[in-house]
Length: 267
Image (cartoon, rainbow, N blue to C red; front, side, top):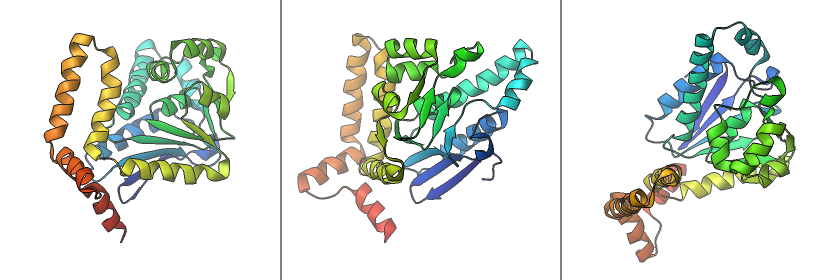
């Protein structure tokens, strides 16, 4: 898979997606949106994958919308703007609902729409030097397409404050408001990300996929809906091949097959 704005590398069961426009701090435009959507569509069919790592080349993670693209947007019609906005909204949803966990390696600035890519990651580890901002209001727009994911991650109260003020945050502040899961010194970023990946690989792949669905779907359900939904989910998992193997391994005090097979791949 060859792209102009991204790179993709696969190492065993780990896929690494990198924004690759360091000359513009990995700002995104229509091409980035199209290429990333195509990539995640392709990756959805790769059953070997267990986790996706999302990061940026150079000193930034993603600095938001590309300035040249924004100049074009000014002259576009409502219909053209709507088409591009729908493409971006669909991409965020595509990443958010991706079957495998997506881990954000936040190596630098994540500004405007760039924070949306942080928010749709299941987990995000930030370098201490990283900066964040929902800066849209400063240019007279709002973080609309990313809004639902940021609000889910941070809560309405914090989102109201930061969407309205456009406050520039350091990594510690981003951690306090819940946008990222952990902050580490820049030279420890890869070490911490690798630790998190190993933790994910130690869990049952189908159980992980169902855990993502559980977290994203049940908050919108009524008690009448989530009681049967959750009961049916655990019942199905208990009788599944993976559930049977996991419980048997626990009772037999051995490693489950998804760990032993991963270990054999490394040999």
